Amino acid sequence: FQTETTTFWRAPGVDPSAINTEVFVLPALDAMEKAGSIVTSGRRIQWRPSVAHGPGEAKSDMWILNRLAHALKAIYRDSTDSKDRPILDLAWNYGDAFDLNPELVAREINGYALDDVKDASGKVILEKGALLPAFATIASAANFDAIACGNWLYAGYFAPADDGNGNVRPAAQRRGQKDPGDLGLYPYWAFTWPANRHILYNRASARPNGKPWADNKKLIWWDADKKSWVGYDVPDFPATKAPDAKAVAGGVGLAAQAGTDAFLMKADGKGWLFAPTGLNEGPLPEHYEPIESPMTNALSHRQCNPVVKLWTTDKDKTIGDKIGTRENYPVICTTFRLGEHWQAGAMSRTLPWLSEIQPDLFIMIGAELAKERGIQNGEIAKIVSARGEIRAVAIVTPRMKPLTLEGKQVHMIRIPWHWGWEGLAKGDCVNDLTHHISDGNTMIPEYKAFLVDVRKA
Image (tube, rainbow, N blue to C red; front, side, top):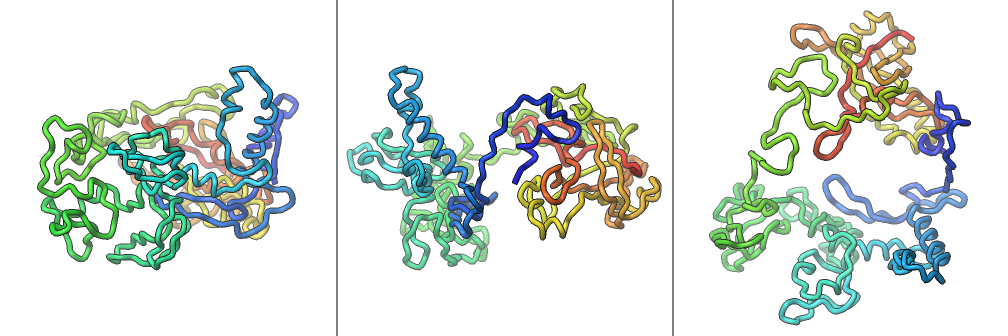
């Protein structure tokens, strides 16, 4: 099926004859139709097997990339031009051109030994061909060039590991259900990066003397007999550093941190409330209003974040990068998701049963605002922002209550954003309304709060 990305040239309001882009569409497999790993927001990497066959000639995206790589190498095979060496010398060992093995990709991401890996004393710590069990092996290696590792944070995720019942398999494929400590960690289920460590900075879960803050929630603790930290998680610091260990004067890295320092990613090992580096806004948290807001910032003289990235490339276009005012656009709008659709709807709006359950783009509008604008439940409403406008079915609901801001009544609406012009369930693109603004650190867009007006279509 087509997506709005591949058919941008025939989007509403676009003249196809003015588009010179050539589009190649290759049939690809859905996530359930191919094997591979997925990573949750909790950092857990799980291997997901293929559970269905794809239709027709559909192939996985990895298969397509593998086929292209082999074809390019074949084209340049006889070249003697130095500029072609990157293609010819590229290590591409994931199976032949028509038989990709995703586990070979996982092996390279995990990391493995190209030759025997030795420490500073010359002792072999990882034999040639073996998978990296953890990223600590990289740090201990004297012959660093004997290791190939696609992502050191994932080191160990595909290495052999016990599932808690004596069964050894690639860590991400484990499905062990034991939960030592009854903390909800389930350390034998798949693999959590890095190092299968579930709680970052977990030294903070114990008192400075190494004893748990609470016995019924103990995570890790210092065992004086074993001279090591033990417990239900992998320590996020040197496991043999005693609580009373002193920082080494003039030390570098972890040597500069004492046994009570819990935040190893900070040079001083401390948790920072005042952060002089790292954030572009400054060292302390600050509240800013969205760039489009119906109220004045009550907590600061600065209305909105001064370091946001404000895109202005399309400021002169019909659907462009303009900023609205509360006088012209008095209604707050936010976007949200539905359980029946996924992301922009490219996959879910092509399925008849999901399209039947949620067929139309709609807005949730309060009864008071609907009455003001003369909009009845089920009628089509027009939503307008400084960037563009859309139409959607009005769902009049008591769930949307007016707000009182600075002594004035302000209304808010909500719109799901899963629709587009392709698929079985078609609708306007809600992001035609949103502004093109990104935060000053990670470039996350500010799509969740903007101003609109609502009118009867």
